[in-house]
Figure 1 (cartoon, helix red, strand yellow):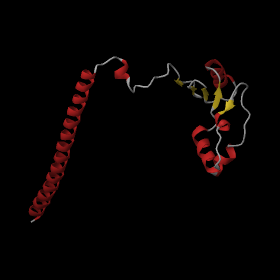
Figure 2: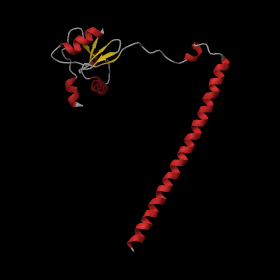
Figure 3: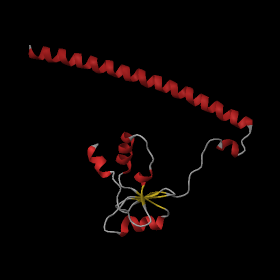
Figure 4: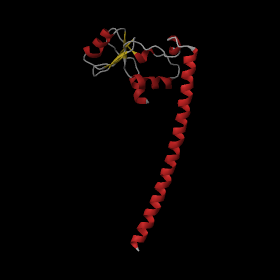
Length: 150
């Protein structure tokens, strides 16, 4: 932790960016070290163009994240961003499914859940039987080896 604490001091960042770690408010110093471990010197910029300029434009390459979630790594690769995903809870009802269709789907879910439980039980029994057969085969091999030595 001591090597991280030395690097947690404020740093000079390119114009238009701030270090993400410096924006984290944390009361417990031990937690600050954990945040620094995760974030290191990742910078935050307002838009993708500025973030790209900051990440690749200077003498030092930075890991930069934009406020809309695009991450630009020091290697130049980009992650995230794009169209935000919307929650899927209640999606079936928003598509206008009737109560009968919902009941049918719930019944299918219950049936598949029961089938899954049965398959899991069969698998557990098969694994147990396989272990017993392996033990038996090992005992038979030991007996065979003893008889071959005599």
